[in-house]
Length: 25
Image 1 (spheres, rainbow, N blue to C red):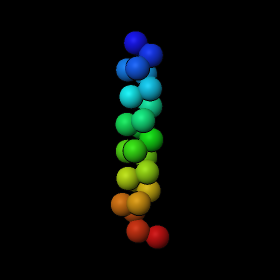
Image 2: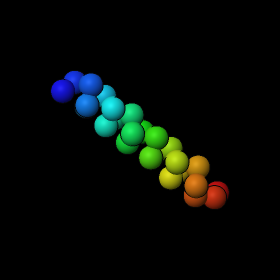
Image 3: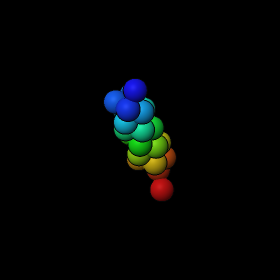
Image 4: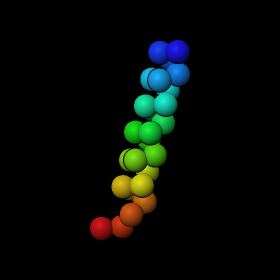
C-alpha cells in the first residue's frame, strides 16, 4: 500500500512539473 502512495505522489509531482514546464512564461 505504501508503494502505491509513493507512486501516486511521484506521478502527481511529475504532472505538476509538466504543467509548469508546458505553460510558457
